[in-house]
Length: 125
Figure 1 (tube, rainbow, N blue to C red):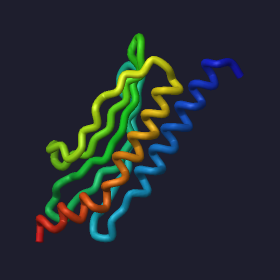
Figure 2 (tube, one colour):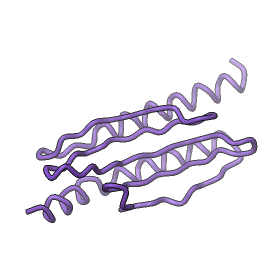
Figure 3 (cartoon, rainbow, N blue to C red):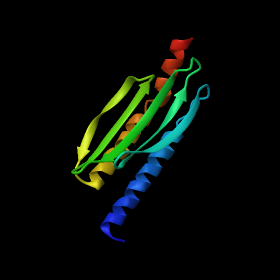
């Protein structure tokens, strides 16, 4: 397999890991739905949306896109478009560095999920 094919395989594997990690986020009192979609020109976003009992949506998401010179990685948690966590956009020159940052961002977005959902539920009661 040539280097471009290996890079594509690594990207697909990273997207699959991210999708699975974020899909595993759950809470016993909140409905969740995973999502993944492609972004224009060359990119993808994966995550999970929780719908709170009051109807608000909380999104946990990460994305990776490709520009002409770099891989752009982002991660965030939002509640009805209000940022709860915004990781800085990273611009990295190699696929290896981009995927490492992407994997790190998946962990950083997933880690506070239970705590944040509990806090938002406490606000409702």
